[in-house]
Length: 187
Image (tube, rainbow, N blue to C red; front, side, top):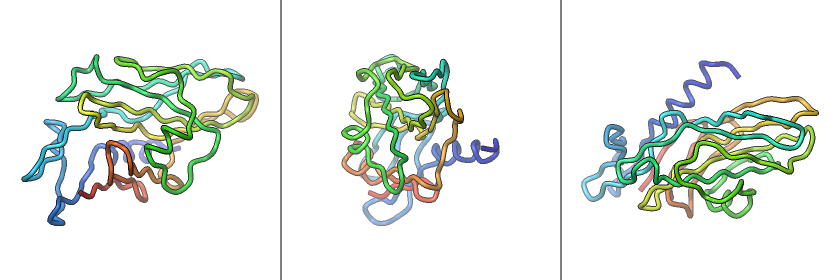
């Protein structure tokens, strides 16, 4: 993965737009961490760096880490993080409810956390990881789905926007999706 593509994805993840009830495009108010419309203000946890990092990668385990989110509703130490993984490559649309029901959780949801250790993995196998952060209003933001391979095979870390679309239908961010690497939000 080249750095310019990696950087531009981070900018896209933090530059969300959505359509209000009248079909007008709205931009988030990043300074306050909210999506603003005439009727409501919905606040989601904000990611200053939405990518995952991996350490202590072995043949059967690894630690996934992330930078803590911020939020104007919930103090940072009270934001709740959940980490998940799967060995199935996500293709098409991946919903928050699919992640929560079909992916394997790494431990329990934890407040004020910046890492989780996945154990019992298979030698030389590629796994796909995602972390969610939820505020007191039950609004959830996702870190980028990232792949990592255990030792014994080719070790790599990549973030892809070409094969996976995250659509949080049925989750706290209902209606938001990443299509072709460009986030959008419809209300």
